[in-house]
Length: 136
Image (cartoon, rainbow, N blue to C red; front, side, top):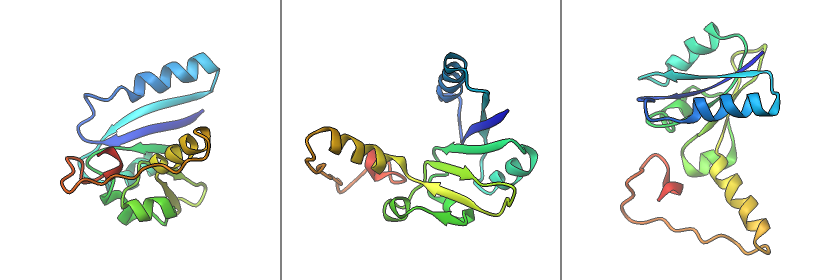
């Protein structure tokens, strides 16, 4: 069974585990979703070793930027934004991870659905979410 998860701290507020568990059951997907409440992004390396079926994790605060230091590959979108929210774990070589940034991908999808009008990008001077300017 494939395993997916969420890394961040704290995770008590997160609805991801319930959302994905329900989705997997509803759609007949043989997978599990686990919350990994970690205080340091480097702890992901231990999680990967301890969970051989883990193929991907979502990344939330406070690790969206710091986790980039341990990734072997980072998408162009994530590099431009300076944050990662999805990490794909490529096996069997556990030294390669691909960091993705799906906010821009979602924005492009919306752009194509709205008659190919380019999205308006707004970056306020002071953002309450410094790890993710797309949330501002």
